[in-house]
Amino acid sequence: MLGVVVGGSSFRRGAEGQALAFSLDIVNVDDASLRRIQLGFLGHGFAESPREPHRAAVFEKKGPGACFVDLREGTVLLAIGSSGPERAFYGHGSYSRDGEYLYIVETRLDTRAGLISVRDGQSFDVIGEVPTYGDSPHDCLLLDDGCTMAMTNGGGPLGSTEPASVTFVDLPSARLLEKLTFNEPRINAGHLALTSKRDLAIVSAPRDGLPTTATGAVSFRTGGAKVLTMKKPPAVVRRMVGETLSVCIHEPSSVVVATSPAGRMVTFWDLHTMRLLKTWEVDSPRGVTLSADGSCFVVSCGMTGGLRLVSTDTLEVLPRDDYGTARLSGSHVYRWRAA
Image (tube, rainbow, N blue to C red; front, side, top):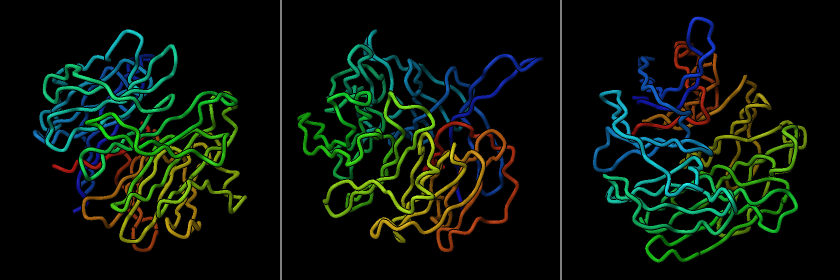
């Protein structure tokens, strides 16, 4: 079974297509069926509730939007407010293992300083906060110990003293355990994927202050070493124009997949040798996740491409074209584990 995936979408509606509308798309990958939950913002991050797996929190990137949805009923249950008037959601969040808490990435708009607001897992009231130990935070992943959070910080604008980083923070004590910075100052730290051994794959956009024609990047950290940003092969790296957007690791094979929407390609890497395995030419690749059975990478391809499937064994694109109705035009696609 390939399972069910979800992701945000934006589209035009109305007689002349003037009004911008948003939805959370829910796609059964086995039969290509599609359902939509109408949202008031473009959904970016997604966190499934451990207590009620058919319900999830959805977050906006750089804005005030967040809500709690029922995936089975297809409804928005309630809105989630930011933790203060000078703060904004910055894209992602994660539940605690028992569902008692919801951790949401936020930023202070006046200083760019990052924080995790700690919420009650049912009422979403703010009960505390934890610093991300960096500026312009974005992604977060709760580690298997249930206490450590890995977070990305985009850093300040190019030339500032605050670098892009990945931080590991102990949530109960709010203590910084480790801070990883990059050997390439021209990129931020965007999204990350993590193995059970805590090896990392990180994708990045150009730092603030650089033009959109500058390049993003793929970086790796394995075995506790430093973070290394890929510079070879040069012909491929130069095509990573703008944001390298989404990343996924197939741990059994150590294959890492990264999407480059503006570069119109998907790259496949070996996590341990850091060698490029393959590039796939495709228009507007955006989100990537694993199918429920682990047999495929599921890739969303913008407004018109729908979903595409890539074998985790052969890295070949599977000849299925029945996902064109699945819009999933937002940044990411997530597997709904409880489906």
